[in-house]
Length: 90
Image 1 (cartoon, one colour):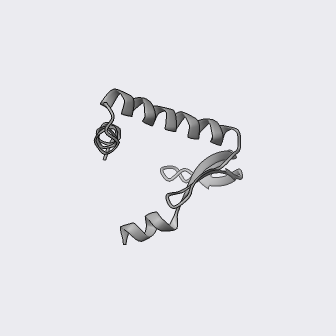
Image 2 (image 1 turned 90 degrees about the horizontal axis):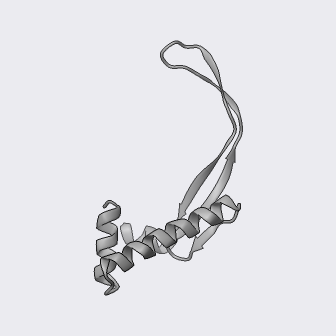
Image 3 (image 1 turned 180 degrees about the vertical axis):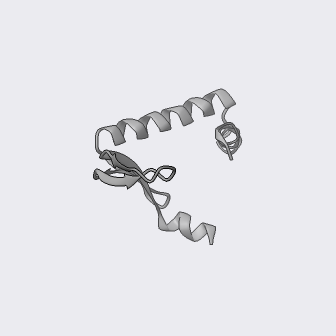
């Protein structure tokens, strides 16, 4: 499912117009981004948790040349699935 299909599905299940559904999805994405940028986690009970983890700098190798490279530290987004969602997919 892509973003357009998600918007259409939400519009149908929530009896919204596609425009209102698109605004709701955009608002959700923006809210999650803002929380993660601020270092907060987003917990949707039963669905899952979005969080930010720090990844330390490390040494790596260029697979084409075999040369050693430095991979800088960065923050990565992590999603941990909730039990209700995990159980519904079994």
